[in-house]
Image (cartoon, rainbow, N blue to C red; front, side, top):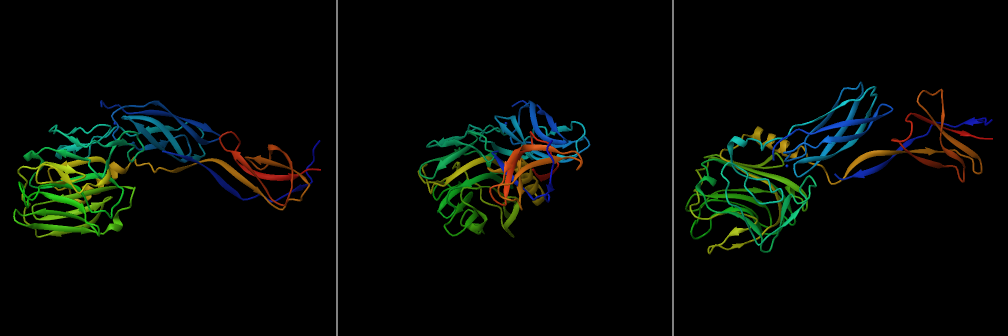
Length: 392
């Protein structure tokens, strides 16, 4: 019978990480939990639901434990997977997975234009405006890593336009959209209406000027306001939400829910009367476009009122709620570091949940130097305390 001669100190544990990458009738999705020794080690989607325009919030409740967390991934409006980001602990019975119901566009009663850009450039708002993709574009993954759910414009000859309609230009408005800019330092137009001939000094403009980002609108004979935003608010190839609110006498810009520029004491802007809205380029005088912007577009709205600051923050929180980073961390394995070993001596790693009954982990090993480690899959192995014993 094997007999332990010496018990070495319990060691430090470091994590080995598994990286995971992490929409229309509406039906709420459902899922079930898999437990192992009181830990939530997996969640299985039993009903993907439908109508999800962004990934819903996932909460894990009940079961006697605490701390488990997870996020959902969606595709074409359906929840396709739920990834556990924190296994929690202490669960004595299977907890419940609560998946938030599909959400409509925030403040939908105020919508003028709604472009989710989920694989097609179609206005799903109340007015069914015609949307034109000039020069094409490429459908790419959006900010939730959903395939074919955002439109990439090449910055050379591609943009989106919406033909002129007076309903696009209410007295007060909010412009909102998610943007992934390739080069914020490039002089280019993000969102514009009006031009120097048929609609001279009418409409509004969002543009990069090479040294800043600016919103401008006009009086009919000149500039009404120019709001400047430092380029440090934008990072190339990263998603951001830009919101502009305009009352009859004020204008504000928000980036990711944070107000970055504002001005009061304005006069009402002069509404355009002929030219279309253009996303990703400036309107030319002959119906052409120029100053193209290399950008990927997603979830674009126009509202018929200026959202309050708190509503802009709510809009950002709602649309960012399912935002899954392209790289997130899921704990799959622990690494047990063993020290003060004697070379050529035989050892056995053991584990226990109660410090009295010990179970072998892996096989015996002969130390080749004073340190060693073993990686242990926490899904397939008992969790608890660890020790190493020296064998005769």
